[in-house]
Length: 208
Image (cartoon, rainbow, N blue to C red; front, side, top):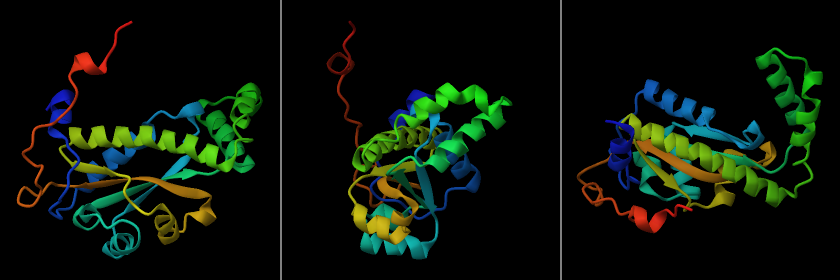
């Protein structure tokens, strides 16, 4: 399928059949997430790839009682950071210098730009970081569709319980959004044959 046909095929799958997504496809989806753009390139989030049945049962019981958590192959938990630490800044600048084979001193002005977000209050920083995570989520959704892997983005969960289950607080993280991966179950998913509903182009876009 070409990209547009893949996006027409994709929908937020409500019920999955438990079939495992091959590792090579999961790896491609994760690589697309890794390559997603973020503001100043800082990637202020982590993605927890939950495969184990025990952990998915724990998440389902305590934080997200949606069937995709149990029926899917993998559950991706996007967790955004609450602050930007000095060690993160150092690590990021050093990583740029090493990757681009340039002296750290040549990044002094860029370092100041990165450090300019440090004074943000925790809630504001988290909101900003979560928006970056959502961009990465979009890349994951599109890549999954291109591989004919079903996916479901999910916000309807108990964030505090998710943070507790995954031990996010001590990592300086808070859960932002989930993405289930798997394959649709035509027998139990009532939307499997439903037409996609979207606004027409004339109502969504304005050319100025």
